[in-house]
Length: 459
Image (cartoon, rainbow, N blue to C red):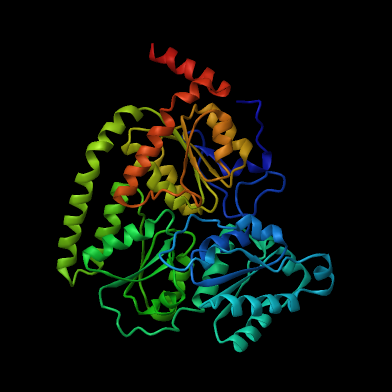
C-alpha cells in the first residue's frame, strides 16, 4: 500500500524473499524517529530477572521506568511473590542535580529490612548513567551491612539495544552462580535457561523432564529462586530455550565451569519433541531416559491430535504475520502455523542476528516479508498488503492488529495462557482458531475490502 511510506534508512532491514539478494542489516540501534517496537536496555534486563520471585527488584531512576516495567511478564510463582512488587527510588530534579546515591542506599536498607529477600537486584536507568551515580559501590556497601547479595544491573537504557539488557541481566545472575552447594545434584541433571513461566509454562516443561528421569536443578528465571541459581553450576547440562536472553549466561558457565549447553524450543509439536529427545540423547549413558522420553512424546501427541486436526480444517489457507522479540521463537511459530495449515506472510523480530535471519529466509515462502526492529507503520503496511488474517506479537502489537481489523494472538510477556509444551500447542491452536474465525471481523471497516476480495477469489 504505497500511501504508507517506509523510511529510506530502514530499507536494509526489510526484505521480501525472492525479490532481491538477501542481506539483512541487523543488531544496530533503532533509527531515530521510527518509533521502534523494540524495548530499551533497561527493559531487556527486567524481563530476564523479573521472575526471580524471592529477590528484591529495585529500580534506581524516575518513577516512569518502574511503571513501564511493573509486572512485565505473566510469570507465575509457586511460592513468594516479591517480584510482583515494583520498587523505585523515584529520582527527581533535586536528585539529578545533587546525586541519588544516598537515596539509593536508604531505599535498599529500608526494603531489605522490611521484606527480608534472598538477594537484591538494583537496576540502573538512563538518568543514573548520565549523572554518574556509583551504583556498584552502593550495592557493595549495603551487601556488607545486610549480609545478602546486592547486585547492580548496569542497564542504562540509552547504551544499546534490548539484547544489551539481556547481557546486563546475565552479568548480574552470574555473580550468584557458584555460591551454593551442589551436594545432592544427580549426574543426569539440567538447568532450564530462558524459560520465564509465563502462564505456568516452566511447570509443564519441568514435569516432562522429571518424568524422563532428569533432575531440574534450576529454572532461569521462571518461578526462580536465588538459592537455585546459586547451585546451578552443579548441573550437567544447560538447556537454553530463549536464544537471545540467556545464551550469554550459558556461555559464561561453559567457560568457567565447563557446563555444555544446547539450544531448544518448547513451542510446537516438532520442536517440543526434539527438545526432549535432544536432552535424552545427551544422557545416552542412561538409556532408560530415552525410553521414557519416547513414551511421553507418544502419549502427549496422541492426546492433542484429534482436536488439532479439527481446528486445522477451519484454519487451512489463512495468512499470519509474526513479530516477536527473539527470532528463535519465530522459527517454532512458523512450523506450528504450517502444521495448522496457515501461511506466514510476514515475520520479524526485535533482537535477531544475521544467522537467525538467514534461517528465516530458508524457512519462509517466496513473497514473505522479513524485517528487523520494525515500527508500527511498517507492520501496518505489510499486514494490509499481504492480507493477513492473524497477527502474532505482544502487547505493543495488539492495537495494530485490532486497528487493522484482524485476529491477534499474544505470544509475549503479558499472556496468562501457557503456549509451550504439547498442551501449550493445543492452547495456541484454540486461541488462533477463536481469534481468526470470530465473526466480529466482518464489521471492521479496515477489513471489509480484504474479506470481499477473498470471496471474489473463492468464487
